[in-house]
Length: 484
Image 1 (cartoon, helix red, strand yellow):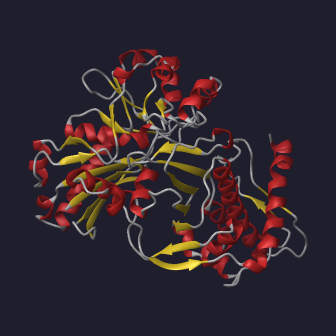
Image 2: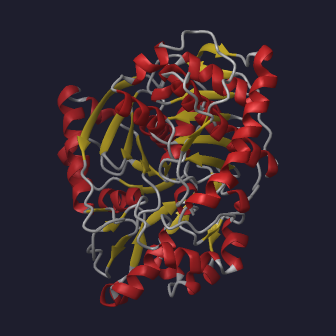
């Protein structure tokens, strides 16, 4: 058996798979987020341990005796969090999470230093780890003076599990301290934030051994002491391992609350100017790029709330066959946008409304607007040298075939729909645990799920969609001029 532990923002999931990669069972425990001030988002690392204990206890109770067969553990987790420890490994303050924006001024100052984009291949976003440490230095100097180690959330769990300060490449790439091309800490970037490499964890690849399970915990859970713990991955890279999106040209589109267009790369292809994330992948010698849109299914949920109709009801009104764009356009910038604009102030809009505009037309415009936002990410990836031939759809919004057909037509690419199953971050983490324990070939382990259906672009509407996309592209500068 192999155990995957995924530390998310809202909970911890423990997933058990066997040697054939069949999911045996899972356990889950919830987490809360503290928001003591506007724009702040924090969690107590002790709650991560509590949730991990609860998730494993649930798994143990439902599958008694089977944890004794676990031969490897993999970790996945929410990225960018700043977990600050003193010399005795005691937590100095609550962890500042990925969606905390308090360090926006510090991030802008670091981003103005050309070394950061040059070495990390990314814009310094407020959610990244480095600007958070500068904020702590400026606002909590007594705490900053005591910082002996900075750990990412999943690596704090590793410290508890194994006693080791270790991280891996995919998660560390989101700190703004990693030389992403060379896959190592940058002393220059650390110095720019008044830190040094002694305060960082050591680095391994996600498939390598990175600690071993402490005997105290092994005894409590009925497991063997010394089981290897894999380096693991940040949440999106772990999901890619679960989806088999690990080879150059492989990609998935995640249609969740936010949206992600994730592409695996065999080389380092940065393009920070278009707000594409370029990070190390969890497998050695591989990287990945992500275009991120902030309101994907959130856009449809917004329309659902104000119309009083469920999201499923709204999409059902459109029928099954894709319709030509109506001339009504929607910008899905309800909470700003990441790729390609890196604009937290921009807001969404409908344009082209008329007396005859119906609720169904608004729904259609929302689905098209999100599809065109994914097209923006596809264009940004292309500018960085990544050309895709097909994508796999995941996330709750992928249940809408109309929406997937709109995305296929907007991208000009076939969209594969996987067969039912659990291919998320915890599954990817378990796969990494298997590779670390058995030295198996990562490409033989991280295979893609079976495809249930493939949705092709509607060729008859490609020209109409191309025209609608050009209208969409022209709206951002126009709207920005009156909302900035």
